[in-house]
Image (cartoon, rainbow, N blue to C red; front, side, top):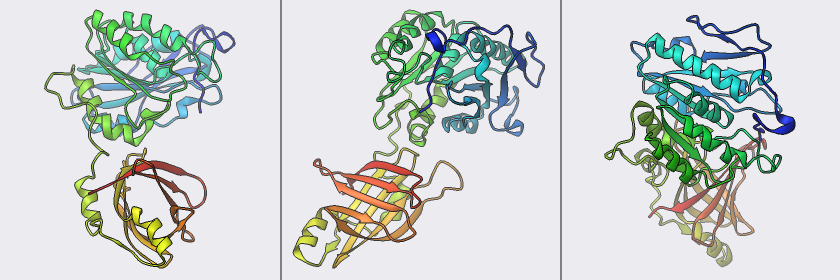
Amino acid sequence: MRRTIGWGMGRAFLGPVAAITLFVAWGLTAAHPARAQILLKSAYGEASLAGPAKARGAVVWSHGRSVESEDSEAPTPLYMKALRDAGWDVYRLDRMRVSDTLPNSSRALAGYSEALKAKGYRRVALAGQSFGAFISLIAAGQTNAVDAVIATAPAAYGNFTESFDSYRENAAQLWPILREVRRARVMMVFFHGDDFDPGGRAEPARGILAQRGLSSLIIDQPALLTGHGAANTGLFVRRFGACIVRFAEEAPGPNDPPCDQSWGRSPSAELLQATLPANGSGSAQGNDTAAATLRPYMGLWYGSYINGREVALSVEKAEGDAVHADYVLGAGMEPDQPAERVRRKGHIENGELVFDEKGRNILRYRLRPDGRIAASWLDKDGHGRLDTVLRRVN
């Protein structure tokens, strides 16, 4: 896991640099020379930009900060495509580690926000992950040009494992930052199992922003999304992408649909159509022991992967030691990831249902005490694994 660091971390403290050089196509100037750069770039190429007159607004995504590598090379998270597809011009703030401190980077981001507004964008939103979430919130306290902030897994003082003495500052230093936000509405997302999160940040954050009279939306530990990088997943986009777009455009209203979409809780029409042949009435034939072990697996099972794809397993029949099933994978987040349906042949192995045909990805299923199935997909070359839980579809 990447290790996030920041200002005020003892030996990890980088200190200020004398100046920052800012480069942007339309001529923003700043002090120079600089030992490193803090650059505003189009996230999806210049051709993707509609310009201030046509775009619904400009949003700037800020990456995290790592000890071992340059996070400026990290991909733009999938949820930013939801904003692009909704008509926003999407930028990213790329920062080299040598000059990437909370004071330096937040000042640069505030300056870019003002320049975007001066260029004519009707809305300017800031989005950030981890250290990028902190600098987005700080920038919103330095300028009136910011209309909204989307901050996921905010952190700038290390994690529980490697920075135990300082990681609680991820909460303590957040409160004064929120008290300085000038006028922006603030959306924050905290995830279960985030090693950078001291816990208990949602309610104090809501209280501070309410006292300031600022509109806010705090999402605390949403189900099935775990870890510091959960906002970078397809599942996060499926469930919260539409809500993020609404929040970037205007403050939440009483008639808004739920922020947490129902995706993944019930099969989509597309997936149901692909799995219609399974009606839960399959048959298990063969010796009594094998049939008894397989019988609880018969029928149609449904779930979703963290990458934002639905999955279904339709166990149709068993003949002797062989189990026949259809494995259905819903469409992915990218246009070149259509829905797939494949026929698989497996067997029972130590009570588990296993599909491990030569040259194909491995599927493993284990019954849980609650009647659901723990499901694992393993890349045939051993380079990837996806785990989820499937429930029976009646």
